[in-house]
Length: 167
Length: 418
Image (cartoon, rainbow over all chains, first blue to last red; front, side, top):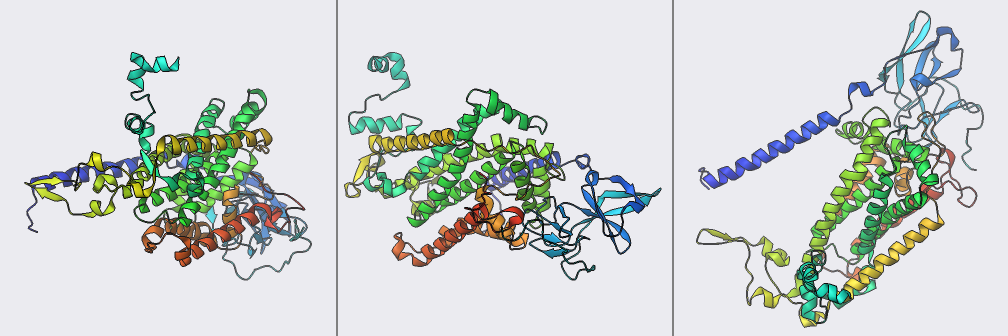
């Protein structure tokens, strides 16, 4: 085949290139229009509780931040209640002292470390700071939960799980 | 009376061939009618029988029509905002004439359509109907199955109850595990960090405009290809007759002009007949009447189901309380069961993608020309194993799982949701 491009071939290529360009431009525009704006996210600092309100092994739910506050090695940590598996809300189970996800049975210990189930990692954490003696949870800063592995606290389940394995 | 109306000047202008007495009249009826045009004039006798197709394609189409009609009715009473949606459904059920009934029709049609489309696909597999020249039509069928699931899934959110909210939370979280584009797709669907007002509106638009339009287009292509491919053995050769070899031939160039296709032998009009040895019957009335009866039977079942069972409506969506157990729609229960055993990338992404891509590639991988199941032992065995495994997973996820996804005997406690 010679390098010469016939007029017909050139025109045919031109309109196809033009159509492809329009297609890409259309997709790009659609993406720009439809992607969620930054304002759609409600993430930001949430003033929660006095810094000394989280005692010992207590777990405190902070609805405004969709998170739990608890102590981990003398530090207050904020655990996102959104299951790292598929986004269900993970409730705290008083009787076993664990987080137990109702959707697919993932279980986390008190500080959100992976214990069992299909979740790929521990519960995600939000940055926590203290301002004027008040704990502030920054839900815009998400730290992915720790990978499954050895737990850093020694707190086995103390009682029956919220729903028994067999009914 | 109708006879006189049809024979009037106006009647003749609308229905050009009102007589259905001779075979020629009936054939002319096909050619001059937009709706009948999708049918061939003649069809092999065995293709008319119930056992050939179980009329699953007709059933699926009937259910789609039922969904469009009942869906339009529901649209008059529904505003897709979190503030209004749930109340609208309650008003529909309690204060609108036949509101609950139409909602039931819509719900059960949707569930049944998932079943009939899947069964249609299974039937086509066991009959070897995906083999040449119908490879591409099989691929379109797979896409239609996926779109059916998406239609059902997007509709699932609209009542804005607990069932809806959390099933969609789980579903869209699954999408986020897709490598590279997952997060973008999930964000695009949700319109924000979690299921909210933007999500409801987006799902509504997908549910009532975008996906139905795509389904209608693909159904048109699907039926068109069915009609073209059914003419294959008609003795006619050439591109237009759906003969794949003709399509693959190099174009004929005569005097610098490209000839698109050549019909050898006698004039096409004389040849476009199913040869007698294939035992042809007229589509009108043999196939049309059966299709009409099948469609009526499906409608009858739907109308009865809607009388007997009410579509569920749980409490209003609560973003801070996941119900326990949280169940995906039943056709995703198998997926949810897999998700409780494997990493989401495997169970939520690789397995479903593998099934869809595998199904699409099937007619191109399976080169065995035989159609009878006993001559296709490997293909039939593989497909059957997949099918049985999937049904078992679905039944377990649907009926055998209770709070915290623990094992529950369905005769002790029932947690299945429809």
